[in-house]
Length: 302
Image 1 (cartoon, rainbow, N blue to C red):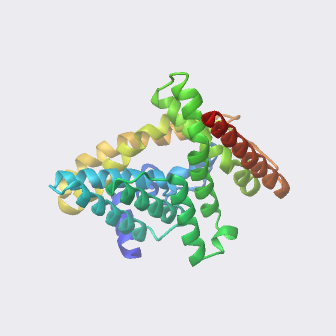
Image 2: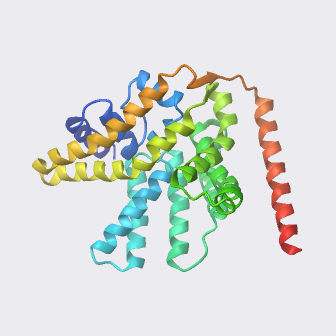
Image 3: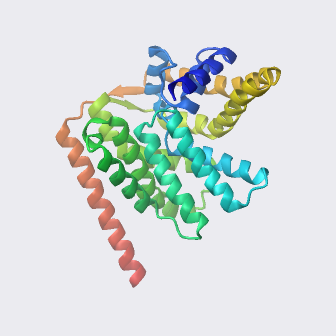
């Protein structure tokens, strides 16, 4: 597994300059080991470190591409679903089973199976099942793995809070622009992970929403080009030169935006957040969500 991963990393570094090669390695293989400390700090100051940690976003993109590939190759849609599930777990195996990717893989597979069988997919049930399964195998993840904590809390934030944005802002106010939806998704995740970030890293990125708006829309396109670059370097080397240039362009834009935004003095601030405030934050949010949901059910029954 490590030999295959190292071989892919080497092909990326041979075809692309630094730091673009390190960013593509993070997007496709996970981790920020290919980036220097200064570049990692830029990602942290702009709140973009999550793009180099394989998550549900990456797994969703991979699943979509695999389904399209299966249909293109002549598979029936149900067969393409199984190809996507197999591809997801091969990918997670390849990158070394990080907690965020395992969580995303389990959730993604459950949702794909529900879609294949014509069932309504419950994201809340999927995240509870994936968390219970992972903690059954290794209960220490809950206490000592920050990646596990951030991954689950960000997903819970999107599942629980984003519907409120969708109901009260996107639908009622007729705000349907893609940038606004990205902003709502970012805020939904940030609200739930901020206490853990404050407690462990003592920093708050003020420019994260803007960075996400500028970078996130082109990440799927970047991952596709990066995948084609790796495949072409294995199958037909001269074609890889073309994909090297095509892949470099979006990567260069992403690294430039992150570096530029990190240069602002106000891009991030230091925050002191003791443990009791973390618990208080989550207790307030859980109580608020419970009250809002209960009042919504009462209005529906009336």
